Image (cartoon, rainbow, N blue to C red; front, side, top):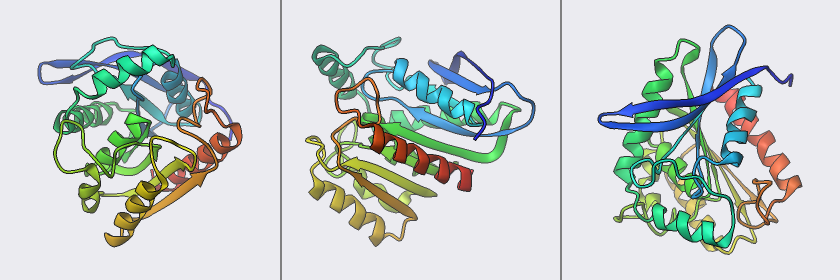
Length: 245
């Protein structure tokens, strides 16, 4: 695939009185392009998430990474130190599923307002906490395809409390690909089995990939980075979005 010249910058996405920071990247070429919402880890829209957003733009997508911590920690962005993990988890615990979905719907509305976005062609991808949020995003009617990377807690909780996110599986609208590491201490393989069973039960169009890797294997800034697994997962993501968006 030929890498495209891109434009990238911060924009504001409005949701009522909330004005959410978001990192937008897209090809500079004329025309319309499918769009992808990139959902952050617990570490904010940091260098890694911005890089993923730009990778999508170079592959021919309009990509946007909304700051889903805007309500609890505007401007939050950290790396991957133990202290960063503690802080990121603290803010994660202050999020609520209904607010996250509302902010993602606002992001969809922003994309739909852009002339360069191909109508009816929006997908979502998320990593870490964002992988969990991506599973929620898959329930939105405008999301045609979702890629959820190592989202912990899908089978056991939902942001803000209530029935686990897994109980909303029947609401998934489009196709979903899920990516897990079999050596991930945060997501026992039994929970991955639960997720797959629920997807099968509700006849959701899905593929589930298990790699011999730990948590965060896609991120080249994390100690669990696994280049081979990351490369294969990226290939699968491009196949999914290339076919559905």
